[in-house]
Image (cartoon, rainbow, N blue to C red; front, top):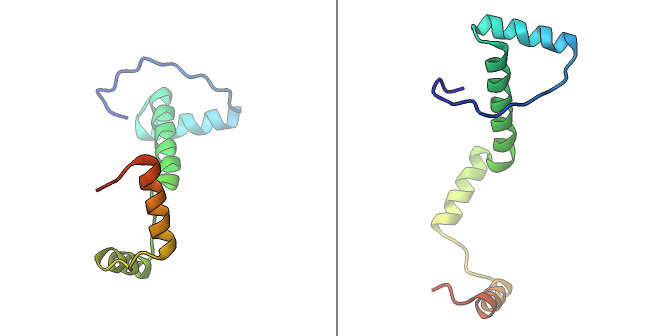
Amino acid sequence: MSETATRTTRIEARISREALKLAKRAAEIEGRSISDFVAAAAQAAARRTIAGVELVSLSREAQKKFAALLANPPRPSPSLRKAFKSRCRLIGDMR
């Protein structure tokens, strides 16, 4: 958590004694308050969760194929042309 972050919101949670003991020990190891440790851990977990759905990971082979398709895209299929014309009629021309 940023040293300059202003804390203005409170959160409450009920946890087991064992979970609290574990969090206190971890906070102690890192030299943080339990509040700071829990807030930082929650923020890190939230970032990982969001990244899991927002970031796309590709194998090296898939990256190469993707880059090749971007550099040399295939010609639009008839159904894609039809869909694009429908979109232009409904929403407007994109050119």
